[in-house]
Every structure is written in structure tokens, then in C-alpha cells.
Length: 564
Image (cartoon, rainbow, N blue to C red):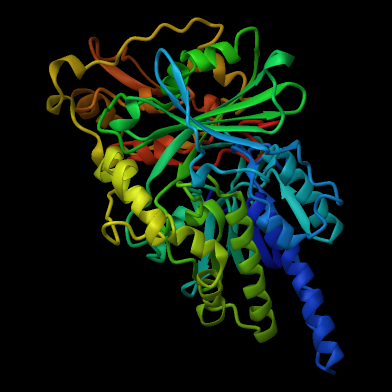
């Protein structure tokens, strides 16, 4: 397979992932070159040749894998396109009612004041899937090529610099042998490759490890489970945006929720669970289902119809976990660079801004014909002089505070952070990788060594197997699993005893299952239902042994998120 002859395509600038950051970057790049040429020619200078720009996307269609709580700060899109509303930006509603709720199992309290980090008035409620489709149309109108169904498999590295990306092969059976429809992935070579493939991107992970770009502290994550419901018309409130937390759970482990109304009587509900739990049975899907049994949610969803389901990991380490943003021939933007502001639970506008800053730096590289770190390192300087960096600095000790304890964070340090513009009591407050927090069964009280039972009612709460069908996930079964476990024997011999196989809990899509081993009676072996995968990356993050690696499946496969 490695000796096969591959087609090759050369471009000037390659973007990986058709998300808001990359699409904004590609569009801004073309416009910035045009602006540079207009200014240069007015002075009698030499114009730049318009670069060839290509965006590749692993989903079958742009937006199919875009899952996010899309309450969008319009700051970045207004910079990219001041008349974005006149140009048809797919706004569903503009928030005019932002509030914070404290949820308890038997009652709900609305805060009299919405905390400043959740003050979303004036933000645009939109489907991120629709936003990326709209941006893609603008890019294509500007002459930018977009290739959906192209899943990046490997970085091409030559002479210590990134030279492009190899696309994954298609038509390979579960044993790794070519089928009749086998098609080797092509090599796409580029002068500069911009990785904006989202959280824990497979190529971004390769880049950070190979070029040692790790941040000051390890990146940490939470998993957001999202559902779209069609509610009764009288319960639909356009312009409403709610954030909240579940008490008293919040006092021992950070959690949070969002809720906003969309057109057609749709309501988007999401629940986020930290992946630094001590509990080996930490289950983001289950926590979201339990949350819906609170009185407020039960009342809202009475008589409603569940329409869609999805899940996505979110980088929440902040500025101290962000990697170095560049190396020779490559740049990182958006969630691939940890650009989500966990304090505000927002990152789309920052992804777009970092993409635009990367584009401006690429113009410098084109002008100098230099794509080394000497020139593209200017991206970091631009970032540090931007409002995106300032926003992150004001939230820089949020996760460190939470790792001390949620009570310390919200009761003391976060209020101090608001006063001291991010410093708080100590700067920086360190933190560790989430999987290192997980306790072994032997370290838990006897009563906590089994997962707590929960009965799903099939009306308000649903099993993972039921919900996966609402994600639109599709993968060909006869192919190598894109979820690679380095040591499956570890799952049976060691993990069962030490942690009770947490993969069965933390995966929100019922991908991992310990089944009886017919060859060894009385023992179980791991079975991977890779066709269920919703591409959330939770397994790659939360596995206590770090032996699970998420890789992209054949191009075009995965969930299909619409209205998400």
C-alpha cells in the first residue's frame, strides 16, 4: 500500500477543514492580496500574483461535520464583511434576552443578573452548518476551490518543513487490503498549509507532536452533547439565550448548559461535561440525559420532538494551553490551536479572527516569497496584538481555577479575575491533562466502583444507540476502523480491573463495547462499532492509557449535522 503511485496536486495555500476559521481566512486572503495590489500599484510597485487556494474538508459536504452552540459574537464577521447581514448571513435570530439559571433536581432559580461572560445580547443565533455553507459560497465566488470528501491522513514533511498533506486512501477492506474500488489518496503539496480542522485534529496532533509546539500546560477538554428539539409554539421564544449549571453537581465538577431558540419552533440544547473527572464512569451523554429531568427542561420539552443529536469535544485550556501557532510551512488556527474561550463558552468569532490574522501573514509570505518561520512567525505577533488574544488573557486562569475546585473558581478567583483582567489570586494557575485525574477502582469507595443505574424513558431521555441514529452518522463497515487502539489486550487484562473499561462510558455514541470472548470463556474483549462514531474525539482525549487514536475515516464519512 505504501508503494502505490499517487497523484499529486500543487497549490500555493492549502487549508485543512472547511470550518468558519479556514473559510474566513481563505476569503480574507484573496481580498487582502487584492487590497495589497491596489495599494502597491497606486505607488508604481509590482503587484502580487493571486495565489492558488484550496480548502479540503473530510465531510461529504461543507457544514456536515459542523457542530457547535452557534450564538455568534458578530465582531469577526463584521471585520471580514461589514455588510454581512445585507449579504445574507444566515442569522436565525439576534439575542435580546440573555439569562443565567441555577438548576436543581427539584427546582430552578433564574439569576437576577446575567454574569458578564454570558451576556450575549446582540449576538447572532445561527446554525454553524449553515454559516459554513454560506461562507463556502462566498469563497467559491472569489475563485477559491473547495474539495469536500477529502480527509487528510498524513502531513507531508520534507527537509524539516511541512510541504502539504496526503489524503487518506479509499476502498480498503477491514483487513487493510485494496478492494475493487480502491483509490489511493493524492498528495497535495503547498507552500503553506493552514490547519483549521477543529478540536484535536489528527493532522494538528501530528504537527504539534512532531515539531514540539506544545503549550505551557497540556490542553484540556470537555465534551458537549447537543440536541435539537421541535417544541410547542407557545414554548418557543425567539431571541432567548440561556446558560446555566446543575447544582450541587457543579460544586464538585464543572458542568454547564446552553439553550437557544431557532426558526421553525426549534430549540438547541447543549450540555458540557469536563473530561478531567476522577470518576472512571464519567459519561457526558448520561449527564445530558439526567439534566433533562430537571423541572425546567421537562416542562420545556413536554410534547416536543427530538430532531437531531451530536457531540463534540471542546478545548478549554485557554491561552496557557495554546500551542506555538506555526512552524516552517504550516500554521494553526481556531479550535486546532485551542482558541475556544471556555469562560464565555464561545470560539467561532476567535476562530474567524485567527484565520484572518493568518491570512494577513500569508500575504507577507507571498510578498517575500518566504514561507519559513522567519516570515509566518509574524502570525503570533499579530495574534498577540489582537482583541482575540486580549479576550483570552482575561480568561487565562479560568481552567486553572476550576482545577483547584469549582467553588474556589466561582466563589473567589473568577470574581477576582474580572477585577484584575484575568490574573486572579495567582498567575498562572497550573493544570494537568484531564485523563490524569481519573482514579482507579481501587482508589474509590466500594459503593462507587460500579456505574450508577439510570432508566431511559424513550420520550425525554434516550440511550446512546437510539441517539446515534439522529446524528446521521454513516461509515462503511468493511474498512479498517478509524479508531485505532494500540493494545487491545490492555482493555481486557488491565483496564477492566483498574478502571472498569471507561471507554464504554465516556464515548457518547456507543462505539466501544466489551463483549464475551468466545475464545476465552469468562473474559471479555473489546469490540469497536466504528460505524457509530460522531467524530467528537472524546476517546482520543479521555482514555487513561492514551492508547486510542482517532484518525479520519474514508473521505465523506461521519455524522451529518444540519441545523446544529
